[in-house]
Length: 248
Image (cartoon, rainbow, N blue to C red; front, side, top):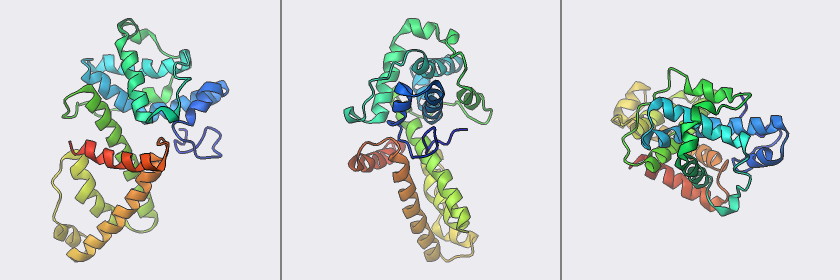
């Protein structure tokens, strides 16, 4: 698996926008590695959009594969420019243009890249991944919610590793149960006193751990958003929008 936080050479951090440098002008290997990274990061929002556009599960899977395959086949996004707007908006606009071509949609099952995007196939065939629709009202909302959930989930995994390495498992458990699980899964947030007792802490001590974990999560979330945001102000805007989307 390619490390999604580094360029295909592994030397420097690469933004999602920066990956288009490799897609536009890199070697075939660099192009495919960059596409693999983007497919891993964005396949689920693409799938959700197509699903809520009226496609059944199998058709949505085929179209998702075809959408990313087109980046290899036609270099359709060579003019992507971070100065022209948010990466997420660019991705959604590209997807809408793709989905509007009914002939292309009809041919989706026949359009598989010669070498295959194996990581995408593996992800989409993973039996642990649920394809049940979220409670949303439009394809755009489905795309945005899947995007936001993926970002939050990736950062949560980073926080879990960081807390484990620091011996702060209680910090992560309290943060996850109190804030993240209610947002992502609609679970009821347990009382702070109960969380404290679980870890042999007072309610106040549990609250202190929660605040520490919240600061760490915010830091990691901003680092994640910087992978595709063009400016610092956009980072702040995107962080706010992530939770606005999830709270809809």
